[in-house]
Amino acid sequence: MDLLLAVDVGNTNVTAGAFEGGRLKKLWRLATDARKTADEYGASLAALVSREGKAADVVYGSVVPALSPVIEAACREYLGIDPLAVTPASPLGIRLDVDNPAEVGVDRVLNALAARALYGAPAIVIDFGTATTFDCVSPSGDYMGGAILIGPAVAALALREHTAQLPKVEIRKPAKFIGKNTAECIQAGLYHGYLGMIERVLDGTLREMKQAAGGRVRVIATGGLAGLFARDIPRIGKNVPDLTLHGLRLAREALRDSRVLRK
Image 1 (cartoon, rainbow, N blue to C red):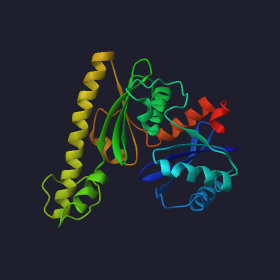
Image 2: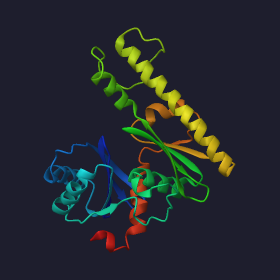
Image 3: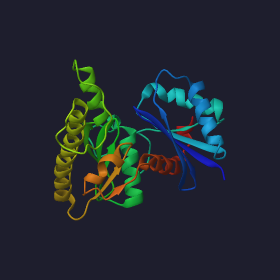
Image 4: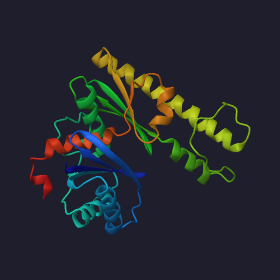
């Protein structure tokens, strides 16, 4: 069967997924590098997809504007496909109930679209990525906005770059709160401090949503670090690492009859 290639261009990773119908057959992550050429990205994508089948269509969303033309050229030259770009302005059937819809990251819109379609509304998606975002879906299925927090990997990098003696450490759950060396101290602070920050924002977000909507609000985790943190946040009901890619698949279904966006 021909495949749909969905490409999520993020600040840390370019995540690509091969869909066979509604099933995600294979997922790959490439490091985001604005210095890479279309040839480099194209050769990588073509080699990966060829192992699974033939790409019949490509849909992508990007929060790195400089890489959008690079990905488009890579798909045209190496896959022979003019990719479908999804942006916050794309007519996806989800209303952006925010002050300035144009400034919403497309990944946040895709998360909301997928959460609504796959799990229902109201819902909160916590995306554990370079930044950690809270994306809220109203009972009527509108995108309501949310919150943006610094991600733990960025916090770890900031400690290394803005202090004289602190090293960069692996983000992981420490055995204890009280570290016995510098690396353990940083890991304890990052992990447990980050959990506390997430819990605090989630408390307030749930309270505001329940005041507006009442009843149960689904909480869904996604993103590269979701597996590390979600297990210690009991109110997260589902961990769906590939939610944004499913949002791209659903966006393509909504837009596939639109010729204007493919010019």
